[in-house]
Image (spheres, one colour):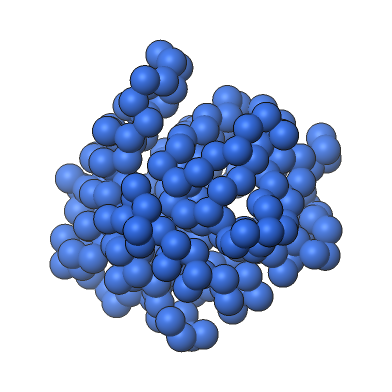
Length: 227
C-alpha cells in the first residue's frame, strides 16, 4: 500500500472486475449476512441490495476521485490483515485489490482534533464515489485503536454498519465484531468507540433521497457540521 492515491482509470464498471467483485461481496453481506434480524433490518438490507443491483446492471462509468493521505491510513494494512482470516475474508481480499485507489477523506470539520488523526472515511459508491449512484452510498470507515467517533446523527438518512475487522461498541450498548450489522434509523444519535486491541474497519450504507445524499447533514450533539 503506497501513500499515493491512484484513482481508477476511466471506463465502465464492468471493465474493472476488482471493483465489481468488491460490490458483489458487499451485496452478499446484505443478502446472506446477519440473518435473523427484525423486519425493519430485513427491509433495509433489501433496499440496499436492490439499489446496488440497479447500479451494477446500469454499468456506469467510474469517476476518478482523489483522496487525502490521512494519518489514520497507517492502520489500514493492519485492519486488512485482521479481516483476512475473519468471516468477511472475501470482502477483505477484494478490498486489498483496490486499496491504492480508495479516496479517503476526513469529511468533517466540527470534530475534536484527535479525531482528525483517528478517523477516515471512503465513499466507494454514491454521489461522490468512484462508482456513481444517486440514492445509495456505500463506503468504508476506518477508526484507529483507542478512538471514539463522538455522538452524532445523520439528518433523514438511514444508516447501517457492517464490521469487516476489529471490534467496537455503539452507545455503550454492546461490543460488535466482524460480520455484525447494526442499523441506525434516520436521525438516531450514536457514538462509536474502539478499544486498544487494534483498528476497526467498517462498511457503511446510507439510504436517503438523492437530494439528501448529495449534500448530507451530520449533526454533532445536535449542531450541524459546517463542512
